[in-house]
Image (cartoon, rainbow, N blue to C red; front, top):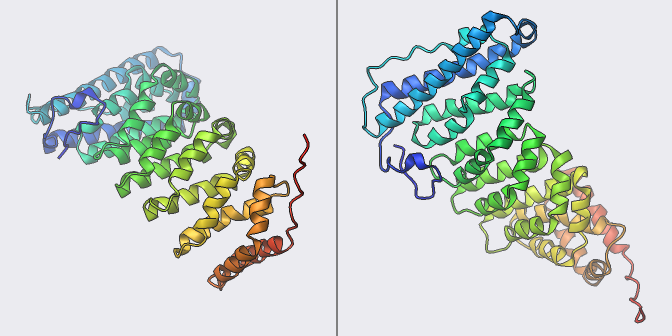
Length: 388
């Protein structure tokens, strides 16, 4: 059943609290319609080049109108399915024969996607998502992500970006939906689909997606937390050419948020995933500026020194991979250098004890030996001058 949630940002749920899923016949028709739309997009990819050459013919203009009307009819049927779910009307006996595959064969891929955008399909999908049955939601997500995926090879990226720029509420609604207990997985999938386009990654990062997803990553709901981490990882790492400069500019906020997930009071799984995400970012060459800013902070060094003392193998190894970046930095700030020097003997003893647990992993053992060697060779930091 599609239960209403007070956190749900979409008005469409206002009158559908505690409502069962749409009737089987209605849900089946919605799923069939969505599947036909996806098939039309898939077939259009292979036909885009030859059909575009004939895109000015009068016959295609008629097909474009027919497809647009068909999409509008499909959206009307979605709304009828929502109405049926609320018991306002019976659409079980109504038949909607919509074959977008036929229209897709006669229409260029660019125009097909333009028709979807003109009919406001992505926004309508999000608006209706909470009131669809599970199978219909899967097809709706597939349609949404197919539009994003196929826009580039079909040459429709410009119109797609213009569409999203004119409707910033779409990305915000997806972020809000990630906190909704019944549709978080679907919204997260659609957000990850958006990361295929650098412009959408920029829009997401500039709209506060990092802080919102970090907040959800700390959720006590394991599924919501996992989806939030997976989505944030994709946003940060899928298009590093645009995400790295933004993250560098917002470094202080990012560091505060990620470190808040590393505290000993946080859930074990959350800490483990946070360490993995932080390690992936710091060890990616595109995030060099972020890495240098992070390892310049002695307070961050202490977080990972303490974490290496924990009994959990995943936690102390995850922290070790970040700690070793502090040690390998040839230009250590004085405060970082001093902490490492004062604690070098205890750190060496700890790392040797941890390395005994990595038998059979030659690369990890080599990492431990390398860091131990650098600590043993570490010289005292230069004295700070008392004069300005």
